[in-house]
Amino acid sequence: MYQLEEKIWFWVLGVIPVIFLFFLILQIWKHKSQNKFADKQLLKKLSPNTSLFKSILKIVVLSLAFACLAIALVNPKVGTKLETVKREGVDIVFAIDVSKSMMAEDIAPNRLEKAKQLVTQIINNLASDRVGIIAYAGKAFPQLPITTDYGAAKMFLQSMNTDMISSQGTAINEAIKLAKTYYDDEEQTNRVLIIISDGEDHSEEAASVAEEASEEGIRIFTIGVGDVKGGPIPEKRNGIVLNYKKDSNGETVITRLNEEILQSIASKANGNYINGRNTNEVVEKIGEILNKMDKTEFEAKQYADFKDQFQWFLGLALFFLFLDIFLLERKTAWLKKLNLFNENL
Image (cartoon, rainbow, N blue to C red; front, side):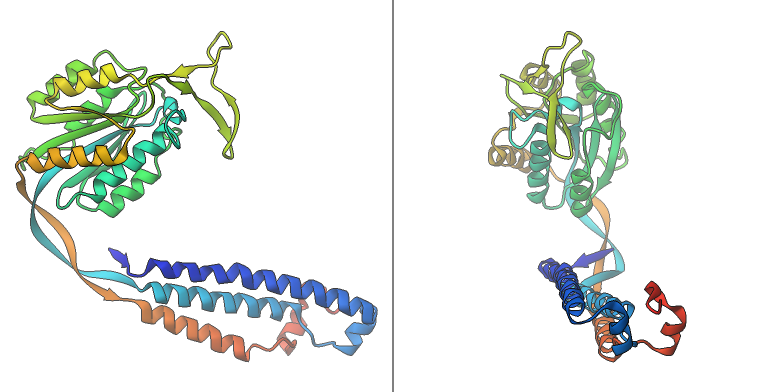
């Protein structure tokens, strides 16, 4: 386990492309100036030991020095001591719809990105609860098991997209069935399933499966993303809209938020439906619901002691800087033998 203390210093890495850009401009200017001064053969006689390879090597070494310095300033820390701690909280599983209809842009920036924003903000407001993530479309897929590692949860969340599951549809029933396997029967924590979807193209089994989940102590809350008026599904390449999805008759498909099915699922499992348009309202409502629940004690392993690792990268940065100082731009005997870039021809 590791931590990054000062992530803002990663901006120092922006110096590296600037160094390469200036080096390229300098080489072009030198080449043009030398061509004006004399022809190629005369230049080789005047400066036979000048090495382009060593110039490039110096830039690479200098860039490595800046990269190591940036990482040293970030100060990565490595966990050295794993402890078991007792926490009180709720087990929360997020089931996120990744069907193609979630690419509709009737809610900014699109339904799927809005779903990610909602889950991220909910996680940011949790304290000691455990979270898990499920992705589903025509089938359900386990994305992250129950964990207290919120950083990992947000990382897995951001990697979700509509191409990760080939079978299309909105099989909410499959997501509910998979969620039931997430909870630990030995630790009778309060169990919450939060489904984020547009509710379209759903299975008719969803409501009955939700009722079965309720009997096992799982409360289901649904969050609807999208607009009841609907919108087209863009087909993009490299972020550019090429077309909109069409049906078999060549008509543009309009996908709409189906609040009725989401309300039905929530009511069958002792939960509530929340419209996801306003992020702050959603986070506030979920927070109120979780705060009213009884917290169950459970054990969790976590790293309690972290040691700084900046000194290794600082040492490497100094090494590369010294190397850059003593690395001359003239050919050495071994370099002449290698004849890189055909410099002796």
